Image 1 (tube, helix red, strand yellow):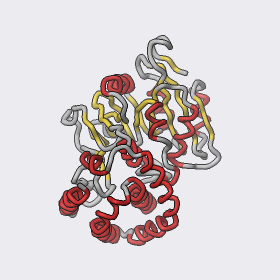
Image 2 (cartoon, rainbow, N blue to C red):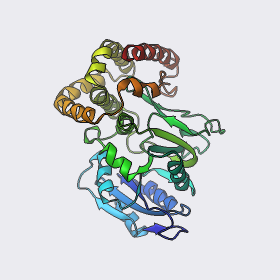
Image 3 (cartoon, rainbow, N blue to C red):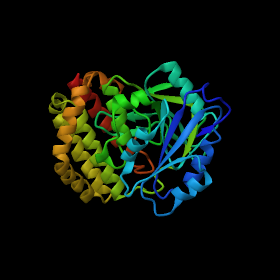
Amino acid sequence: MKKAGFNENTKPLVSIIILNFNGGKHIEECIESIYNTKEISLEVILIDNNSSDNSQNICKEKFPEIILIQNDKNIGMAARNIGVEKAQGQYIVFLDFDTVVTSNWLGSLLKSFETHGDGLYQAKVLRKLEKNKIGSTGNMINIFGLAYARGKGETDNGQYNQFLKVGYPPGCCVFTSKDVIKKIGKVEEMFFAYHDDVDYGWRAAMLGIPSYYEPNSVIYHLSSPTLQWGKKKFFLLERNRWICLLSLYSKKTLFKIFPILIITEIGIFFYFIRKGMGITKIHTFFSLLKLLPQINKRAQEINKKRIVPDQIIIQNFVDDLVFPTYIDKQSAPVENNVIRKLSKLTKKIIS
């Protein structure tokens, strides 16, 4: 356990849970930056998802105080559940291995939690290789389960330095209390990777637990070092988006908006075809069919615990999508406009 500047009894313990899969030097840089955190009592729990590069053992040798848990296979983001069970802290942080944190990142998140209360909190995320470029200043959810990071790719000139309620915190940095984690429940195993953070923020909202962006906390993130943009990533994003839609909306809401969801899906399918990934989209459909019994069971369990109805939750959903121009520079504005109009119509139907 690492303590920086405070007696154990003066500050609550924060458990930082990091997943590692062939993290190489990135994981070493991450942990080293964590141990430069000012005036916080913390423990680092490293969950290794069966890395083959020995990075987990190298880290344990370099930082013997970390708690290393070795999985015999890669179970994706659900490995965070193991860390939560092991954690001794009053507060929990989910942190990606390819991040580097600043010295006051954790103190700012802790202070924000103490000020604003129960919630999921995210830091300002800047790019690790271009430190003046934004990775996320608040992650937003669209009514169709599409999501984006506010300000992504922009130069950081302080234009997003206001505390804000957001859709969900990005998985690279999530801060909350252990009590809040217990209320929301486990990270979904079906997802493996991608959209697990959307799901977690949405599930929190269903329980009346908001998500917040705290700009005074700053971290740097490399983003997708082991799975770049490609067919596998698109498959996981699309499949998991639909797992969210089918399990987080009530059946009544799904029935109301089903026609518009189909129209949206047709548009997304043609988008995939233009990207040479039409087959990937089809594979997504058949994968969902296989998972349908699990999804239905999950939907029943989640909606039993629901406190906040869909009509209230969607008020915090954005109408736009903001397709990244680096993915599709020419058609992004048109597609964004279509999504915006369909979203506004769908919200009226649900309300």
